[in-house]
Amino acid sequence: MCSFEGLLSFSDASRKWGLNGSTLRKALEYGKIVENVDCKKFGRDWVIKESVMYREYGNPKEK
Image (cartoon, rainbow, N blue to C red; front, side, top):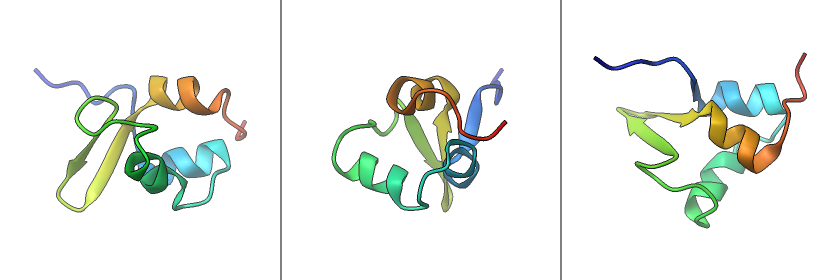
């Protein structure tokens, strides 16, 4: 069984952490986050683990 708990779309994660929309794509490109380990693409949408966002960017800016 696949659980989607703890997963965020790149756009939701960017909004929640107050990041520019391209920040996560650039982090993936530069190796800060790793495809199929930290994040995964489903169709045209990327999802990232919430734990990775905390690890790389600290606490969210959105309350």
